[in-house]
Image 1 (cartoon, rainbow, N blue to C red):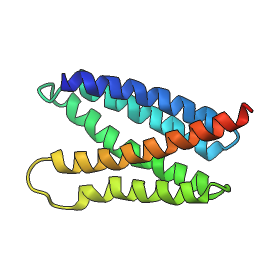
Image 2: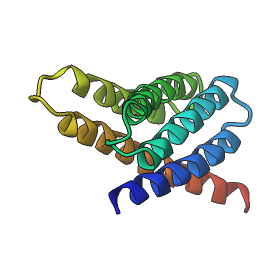
Image 3: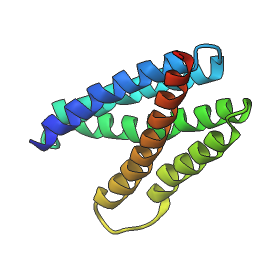
Image 4: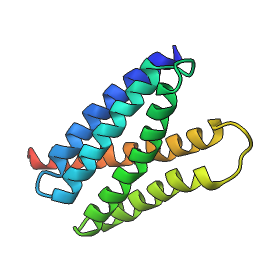
Length: 142
């Protein structure tokens, strides 16, 4: 069940990144960040396809996801900060910093806590950005 959720989340993240690519069609740096996010989303899907007992593929997929996710967010924050969407750029930057910094804190042996905190940071970011994309997209249809 958990791995199926990861696969579905990866597929949904690919769709989200595709929408982000279209949302930022005039912004080259933003489009690069959306592409990196697509790559990260494929890695998230791979985490579910190759569970923990499939070593070392699961490990590589997980590391790839947790590296590409904040990289795409850092690129996106820079893209937003170069536009009138500066508040969204700062919010994206903070979310990227949180998604990165949790990996430097010694929580013990496992990776569950940094994975959870990094995932929560990215989830909050995606929700806020998704609502912004919907709001601005709906405004362009009027």
